[in-house]
Every structure is written in structure tokens, then in C-alpha cells.
Amino acid sequence: MSSVLRPVLHRASSVRLLGTTAPRTANGSQSAATPPKVDGILHDKLAFEDPGAFRVKTLGELLRSLGVFQLCSFPVLVNNCGKLMSVARSLLGKRGFSLVLRPSIYAQFVAGESEAEIAVAMEKMRSLGLRTMLAVPIEEDLGESTGERRYDDNLEAMLECVRLSHSNACADPMMQLKITALLSAELCVKLSSLLAKEQYDLAQLVRAMEGESVHFPGLTESENTHFLYGLRRLHKVGEASFRKVRVLVDAEYTYMNPALSLVTMAMMKKFNQAGAWIWNTYQCYLKESRSLLLDAIRQSVSQSFCLGVKLVRGAYMDKERKLAAKDGRPDPVQPSWEDTNRSYNGLLDVMLELISRNPERYRLIVATHNEESVRHAVSRMLQLGIDRQGGAVCFGQLLGMCDHVSLTLAQHGFAVYKSVPYGSVDDTVPYLVRRAQENRTVLQGIRKERDLLRREMRRRLKEGLLGSAKRG
Ligand SMILES: Cc1cc2nc3c(=O)[nH]c(=O)nc-3n(C[C@H](O)[C@H](O)[C@H](O)COP(=O)(O)OP(=O)(O)OC[C@H]3O[C@@H](n4cnc5c(N)ncnc54)[C@H](O)[C@@H]3O)c2cc1C
Image (tube, rainbow, N blue to C red):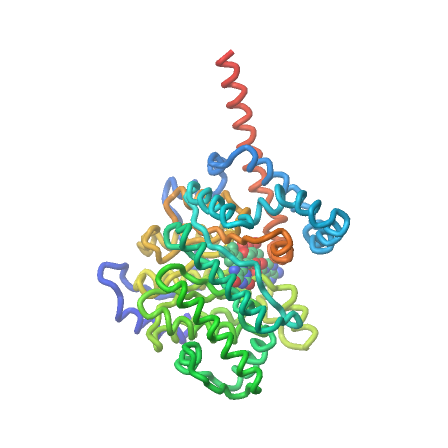
């Protein structure tokens, strides 16, 4: 157990709610090594081997998923999907490309383009017992910076996302936010390097968000102006979503994450006094993930705000490693997948312990397709007496992926969100390509979901044949 967390837990326990589980030592690594058992029926169901989860799907949906997953099982297709898509687009033209993609890959992973299509997708999700976390497919890396006007347009898209999330309300709606849609990646990198040397005051950032003309040390006049504009854009998203939609800020690359966390913490300070409306993301593949999360917990206590945490493994492993090797820096990523798994389950334990003591101040989304981590989270929730419908802990998977996990969890009363991108084919293709690269291990290991889909198809076929034999 890190010595950093101890005083935090001590303070957190002083505001413990009456009637919650007694405090335990938050020993993440120990629990991660010996995952607790889940009881009886739930234990069997959480093997995620029951094709019954797919009974709610139409035949067309089963066939489409099978076809798309079959394609994804070829590494050469997933690894080169960016190039393949652009070749297909130039050969088929915009219309032809859209005609091919819309009923297949697009329909599998994207909600739609028009408000009506998105509403239908959300309603469908609700009927399956799933919740929606809308994601605007805008993001920016270094060298892709656009002008102030473009960021203002992105702000409009984010505000529209708040509106769509709220108006088609599933219970407790959520949306994802990429800070680099509203603030240039270049400035985030510069701020991140400044933060290595000096601290920025959260209260000052909040004042800047609210419109005060602050000058931040280390920035040029034009950088400072852009930062103020960016902070005001973020403030508008915070205001529009406050008490309506929970905003989950995405984590990106290590060279810009400190800046993203800084502005997210400022938003938390402003909007999370009484509840977690703004959440931050922690990438467990980073060696520093434990200290980053413990720091955030400490800040939430010292600055008296509620902390919402999206826990992920991390999406940018290859690039992080390449950059570190190029710059001669130590690799920031855990040495192996097993180490990342240990890190993930350890941080799950830290959060679940905190939540069991104080579910009003801390919230967590277990954002993973990894069945073992899902089982680990469920078992710890049961052990710690965390209410599966209490709202403090929920699960998250991407739309179109690992539905056997999402549906099974939902069928057992857990809150499950699907991360749902929307937009035109042209707008969502770059997003889909990035997600495919990030999730290629998941996509290529999707054999189990394919097997379950096939078993459900066979069951329906048999049932259909028996039914017609009886009628005959
Ligand atoms: C709802 C949702 C929101 C997300 N938001 C974000 C976000 O904001 N930022 C972000 O970065 N990602 C985000 N992701 C993506 C996430 O980080 C993972 O890339 C993706 O979910 C695959 O991880 P897994 O836990 O689902 O599956 P698994 O297959 O169990 O894990 C794969 C992951 O393990 C890690 N890994 C694989 N091989 C190695 C290795 N050799 N050494 C070390 N680690 C390894 C990598 O992180 C890889 O992505 C999100 C995912 C979901 C479902």
C-alpha cells in the first residue's frame, strides 16, 4: 500500500456514510493477486459463456456482428484499416463508400448521423437494459491544430452532445469529452512541460474559466489568449451539463495528459462540489498511473470536490513506446500486459474501497472489455457491499464490442454504458480507424463473442425448424 494513500483514506473515512461497509486496508496489489470469488449463479453467468445474452438481438444484428467480427479476425485488415479505407473511398467515391460502410462497419460501431437515428439507437440500447455515453468523434494530435473558429465549432458540437444526451435521457446520462477538441494539442504539450516545473492554482483556473483575464506564467501572449478561450469553452460545457449529464474527460498521450488533468481538475473544483459531474480518466498501462490516481484522490479531499474516475488500460501504447525510444526516455508503459492487468485490478481495488466508504464523493466507471477485470470488480463490489444500482460504480464498453459482457452485466442489474460515437461516415471513419488500432488486441481476440453469436444463430435455426415441424 502506498504511503501516499494512507492519510487520504484516513481523511476520507472521517466523512464515511453511516451504514456502509467497515473500513479495510486498501491493499490493491494483494487483492489483485487473489481475486475474490463471486457467489453461485452470478459466478456461472460471469464466465460470459451464455449465448442467451444475445436473445435480445435481431437476426440482422447477429449476422452483421458475425460478418464484421470475421473481418476483424484478420490482423492484416485491422492493422491496415486506415489505408484500406482511404483506398476504398477513392475507388468507390463518397457515395459508394458510404453505401458499403453504412450497413456494415458503421452500423456496428456508430449510432448514426441524424438526431432521429441517434434517438433510435439510444432507445434500442435502453430496451436492452444498456445506457448511452455519447462521444463526439473529434480529437486532435500535434500538428493538427486548427484555428479558434474551429474550436468554437467543436464547442457547438459538444453542447449539442450535451443536449442529445439529456433529451434522450437514459438514466443518469454520460458523455465523453476530448479536451483537445477545445484547446490546441500544442498548448496542452507546452502546459504539460510547464507543469513539470511549476504548479498552477486551481482557483485561478476557475476564475479564468468564469471570464477573468488571468495571465498564466510561462505562456506567450497568444498562447495565454488561446488558453483563456479554451478554458471558457470548457466552462460552457460544464455549465450546460451541470446536474444533467456527467462529462467524462478522455485521457490521451503522456506528453499532454498533465495539462488535460489540470483543466479537468479545475472543472471538478467548479462543478463537483456536491456530486461528480466531471470525471477524469486514468490509464493503468502507465507506470505512474497509481501515483496519478492517488494524487487526484488527495486533491479531491484537499479541494473538497467529488471525484469521478474512468479507469481504462490505455489506448496509445505503441506510440508512447516509440516516442520514448526515439527520445531516449524510459518506457512510460508497463512492461507487459500482465503488469497492466495487475495495475488495473489494483486501482480498481483502491477506488472500490473508497466508494464503499463514501459512495457520495467517489464514482467509478470500469471501462474495459477485459472479462477478468469485470469479474474482479463485481466480486469486490459484492464483498464490500457496494449497491450495484446505487450509481457509484458502473461499467463501460464500446458500442458494437463485447456485447456478451455488457448484456450479461445489465441482465444482472449492473449499470452498463456503451460508448457511442455518432456523425457522418466521413467524420467517423478516422475515429473508427483509431479505435480499431487501439483495440486491435480486443478485436482480434473476439473469437469468444463470435462463438456465442454462432451458438445463438444455431439455437434460433433449430427453434425455427422445430416450430415449423410442429406447425406442419
Ligand atoms: C468506455 C471506454 C472509454 C475509453 N476511454 C479511453 C480514454 O479516455 N483514454 C484511453 O487511452 N483509452 C480509452 N479507452 C480504451 C482503453 O484504454 C483500451 O485501449 C481498450 O479498452 C482495450 O483495453 P481493455 O481493458 O478493454 O482490453 P484488454 O484486451 O484486456 O487490454 C488491452 C490493453 O492492455 C494494454 N496492453 C496490451 N498489451 C500490452 C503490453 N504488452 N504491455 C503493457 N500493456 C499492454 C493496452 O492498454 C491495451 O489497450 C476506453 C475504453 C472504453 C471501453
